[in-house]
Image (cartoon, rainbow, N blue to C red; front, side, top):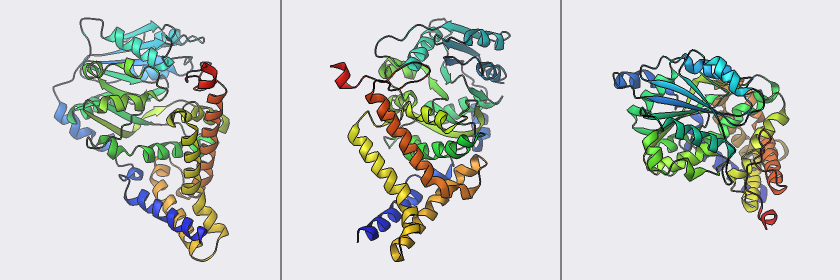
Length: 389
């Protein structure tokens, strides 16, 4: 009876994910699909934009990122500001070399004050500098130092924001998908993000769902100031979603996929990728042990139960498990195609989900041992209560 109940319940869950969660899996929110129409509507009005790039030990990739910004064919005023977050590898020098012929400013970042996450503090310093002069920009483009934008993407993004009257418009860039670890784990990263934050729900002002993709976010500067500025999310490890929640309380936000912004960040091994996920996974659960237990149980029920039933049970439970597993592969297929992966790789999603569960457990363990939010030598998560006492 229990096995039958699990089989029926897992199939119901996957029918809900297929039909009832905002169509998250279809990947329909591609900015390229609406870019031309948006640009025609915005023609003749191109507001000033300043790109703010927080960078910590990014000398290897920042030159390519800045060069891509210098190649933007944006018709309005555009400048770039790099905030060097106390790098030890010559990031600032690499940035200056890449932007020596363009409108580039490199700021020497200061140590984050108590209670501030390092990236958010670097962003805050850039915002202050951008708004200090007489020609303050209308929009701020927060872009990571490992992101390369194709030449027309800024124009398309500004048009997208203006046409939709969005005070925050962000793009989920294409992640690098070349190493063995990346080929298996990267598409699932995008899939899980879409499942957690359906883009159509993010775009719907009637829903509370709010999310953004931190690698490329265009923010209306005045609206950000009116919302309380980055001070309102000073300690956020998941700064992009915290910013989205802040801005959605003020107005329209939009989130879209794109094929024309690429991340250069490489994860050559499963351990490398796991460290990236572990940096903020437990923060997503609000550093809560009960939420962690629920998340582990949910991942097991949703992703592991269907293949286990399909392989090891018989009769109706086996049929229900096989059907749920098939739906799982169906909804994962568009993300796999986006990343050039074979659709049959969807059969391995349960194993990939198990890996992400282990990464999340590792994230919790890091937090409980005082190493939460560890990234590039900096511990950023708040200390556990037992250690603060």
